[in-house]
Amino acid sequence: MLISRTDKGEVAEGSKAHAWRACGGHKPPVGSNPTLSARFSKPRKCICKTGTTVPVFRLSFSKKNYEVEAVAMLSAKEIEKRVAELVKPVVEKHGLVLFDVKYKLQSGRWILTIVIDKLEDYVSTKDCENVSYEVERILDSEDLIPGRYYLEVSSPGLDRPLRSIDDFKRFVGSYAKVKTTKTVRGYIRNVDTENEKIVIEVDGKEITFDYKDIKSANLEIEE
Image (tube, rainbow, N blue to C red; front, side):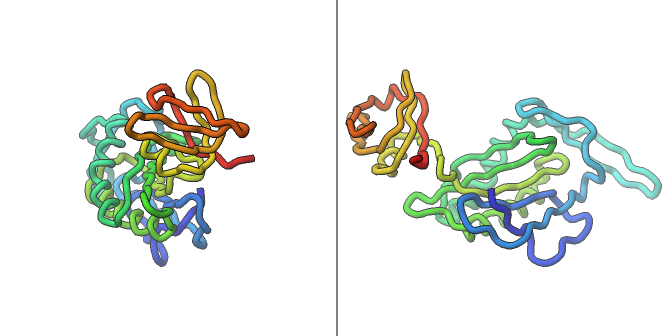
């Protein structure tokens, strides 16, 4: 994952959303610039695992102290769903497709990953930057995610999953790993969307698979 700047210029202390923007598979821009959460003055002492309920707190400041008020309970999956609903129009406005949203705890920090795709071309660093700036403003406004987190906007990557028969058709000629009752690696040679048949060339021999029998598949770089 290649890091790009979070904002132009110096970030003011107390700015919203602790975020890194990122874009995979491209030449990285110079530098990175994390920002700090305005609503949460200190990191959480508790660590919530992905899939568990995440507490949302609101800080009420006074001259000498502050009070913490529990206002909602959201699971990581609920956050992913709500973020997807919020950012999908932004992504589509830029002629892109929202491929995935993931909110996970990694190495002791929460990371929100928004994966974007472009059907007829490759996702550029500029695409990631444009989406990232707009998404951060929306998330700041909605105040959906508790505490500090890192924001990553990326392409599906060179090992992207093939999640539909149309994905196979799009990447005819590419090298892929396909799992059925066994795992095979080879080139996608033909896709019959009407009969849902996929032909993979494995070690010089063409093998036909029923799409319904494929448990998972993804692109790979041939060794």
